[in-house]
Image (cartoon, rainbow, N blue to C red; front, side, top):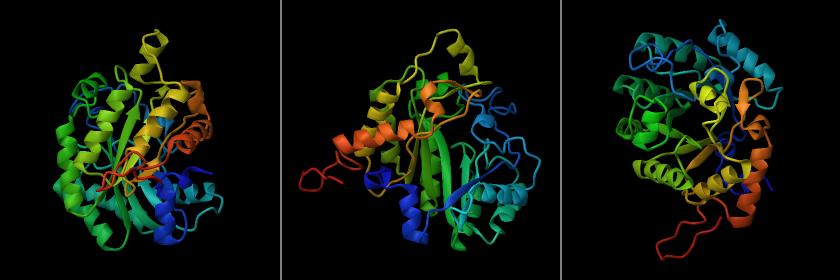
Length: 311
């Protein structure tokens, strides 16, 4: 059995809503980041080199051309798509330019959704109102917030430039406006343990969330962490340890929360470590085996009578 048998995945959500899985078409709209342009700092987060995760990064193509190219790469697996503004901070620009780029994406008749990836400290009330307007038109709208960790010490260590309070405030305002929030967490950040992963997950659930993306820490070329890794100053999660931690987080997650992703991979030579993150399926298979053995989403939660809830 696959992940869908144990987890409320984004694919299942789309099939319920649209009768098919929706492919996210990644877009680079030439946004930057306040942690790179000097507003908050320079150099970005210590793990970051977005070019390793988005092959569209650096493209001079228009939004329409990027969508067409992305649709071609799906090889006919989907007929409807979500426009996914992924690279850097996709709410960090003038309102006029944001609206112009979002409008260009959703003008495509095959686009039924809009997903915007950003930082918790770069989401104004004006942006939330803009996203709510697209949702009112019937589009599937998600605000993806890169939190990575709820621990202040970790956020400072990785040069994130914001704290948990900014995250909590943005989640509250977005969900009050009816916008679904998907939160990113990275497992394996320097100095963190399995117990820290659990604490971040618990803090996110308490703040309120509609979706989760969980990633293993990658060391990628061009990142600050790459220097520390080459100097032998970093230890990374094994595939087994990662699967165990993700499995427990899934079992502690209410069934209504949608998992957009439970692992991730990157391509060599951009990926430096860990080696298992170079393979799309190995990590996922390890997670599924863990769920088959110990239980799926919500398994560790209890109902009102105190009975264990199983998948």
